[in-house]
Image (cartoon, rainbow, N blue to C red; front, side):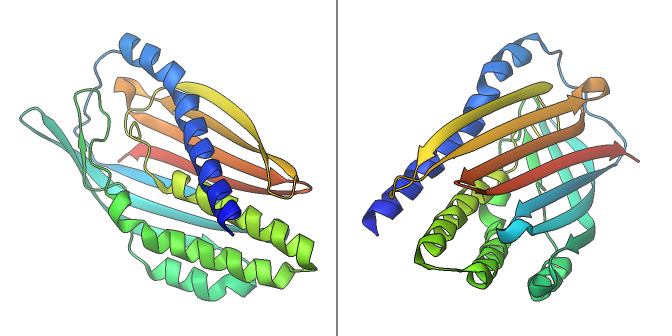
Length: 243
């Protein structure tokens, strides 16, 4: 058990390093060359699509929208917003979890304070994201139990579930450049080895586009984990439109 726990921490650090490494090289150059961001005066709708890959090809998709606005106070830029809709698409066996998620009011990235480069300096998801992560963990646990077939496959699925939890934790964190993203694409891949010698890999892909003034158009983050013949994918896509 100690070995598995240690390896899980290594994988989590590896995923974090991939996400940071994906963006770091392009970010410094892009930030140095980018003009100052322009804060819009109109309200906007922010849409987030979060899809978590589960066992046996199933997935859990949660789509939320928030209406928000930018406010300037001295040197600070504040972003306020509130949820206006939520839809959930999930396998029938997960309907109880889906129903809870539909009723839950999520604050999203609001309120947020931006620095002079348009990056979020206060991330509210650190304090409020535990309910969402717990629901996904419960979904994974249910499907793992339904798909268990033998000790070796069960152990492999459990370990893959741990990887999915790790990727879910990372992808649940709000990108610091969400509202004024670094434009472009980046990808990273890293091979991993399980305690029993089974090989796998973790890959991360980031892509972002922006409109006038550097304001977010779309931001897409994908994290994939593969162990042997089994794979899990997590996808998070943000869109912003002015109203």
